[in-house]
Image (cartoon, rainbow, N blue to C red):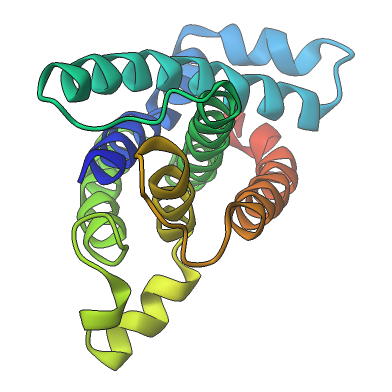
Length: 196
């Protein structure tokens, strides 16, 4: 369950990252950023990577708690680097998704409601708590397109001694990376519209 808990904590922090953009708009900071000669994808990617950095703090806390509880963690350097990459990609993906929602709804109240509405279905329609194989067929289909499933799968294969990745860590990373790039491009197009 340790990889699922880490993925959950990263998801819950990243999914509310878009509210910061609404605050930036209300304070006038966003207008200044958009007036600068910076490509929009670079702004979005910068925000995504800063969310990834926050996710690393979560990973550190979960690792300390898991170690204290006697979870057999994989101490291999490459596995640790892989976990950091997965956490950064997962945080970047869900924070960019959050940014897209913020660009569409434009108010804090609506954003908080939608954020709350999305977190639990994303979490429970993944393999964070229980394996995909025991899910009903309709939920398995949803789980297959849920990016959190691939994040948890990669973390499971990298974090825990004897942990197995169902799809392979390479496939998991490819899915997370592709989804993140796609969402960054979508967010870059929507980003200027938040000030309208």
